[in-house]
Amino acid sequence: MLIVHHLENSRSHRVIWALEELQLPYEIKLYKRHPKTMLAPESLKQIHPIGKAPILEDEGTVIIESAVILEYLRENYSEQKLQPKNDSDDWQHYHYWMHAAEGSIMPYLVMKLVFEKTTQSPVPFFVRPITKAVAGQVFKSYIDPALEVFSEYLNSRLAQSAWVAGEDFTLADIQLSYVVHALTEHYAKHRFEKISAYYRRLKERPAFKEAIRKGGPL
Ligand SMILES: N[C@@H](CCC(=O)N[C@@H](CS)C(=O)NCC(=O)O)C(=O)O
Image (cartoon, rainbow, N blue to C red; front, side, top):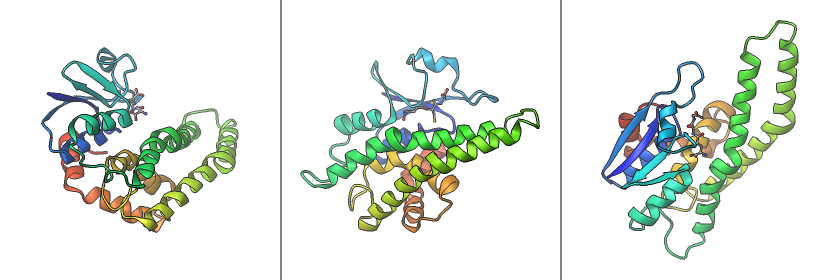
């Protein structure tokens, strides 16, 4: 039996979503975040020493990293579903978005969140303008221009095809969904028409909704 070690309100929603798309039997083990720090509980480290979600267990094999998990499902269980058609150029796009989501785009989104939190954390009133100025400068010179480039590139990709790896929905769309959520809701605020329409299409998929129903809200 496949077991998803799922942290509430997290990226591990994507693994449940993929399992729903593939209509595979699986079990969810739910972990709660620490109410103050929002970190994963120590018990996740008993499954894998890194202690971050998602973790997939398959008959004693323990797999971490969402892209690795999705690729494991593709190689072992998908029967060629949720992937581009054989020998098409779409594979290039598939691999790019599968890796870029966590490897290239997510770090900017996490940095933005961390800097935003820093400016909100309690500091003496005379220090606050300094933390705000530093964060503002980092946003302006480093984080926001990078997010703009990724958003424009994704928007132009979605002007060419319905899904990121061509005309068929694939696991790369699932992997990218968390980034799309953060870009649309928090960074770009629906400035990119194609990304916003794509985001709506992702959320309309029955398997997406079922994953929310079983794993809890994002
Ligand atoms: N790149 C990893 C990210 C893993 C990760 O940071 N997961 C978060 C969930 S959104 C987590 O476990 N956070 C809790 C913690 O850091 O304690 C992946 O895609 O699997």
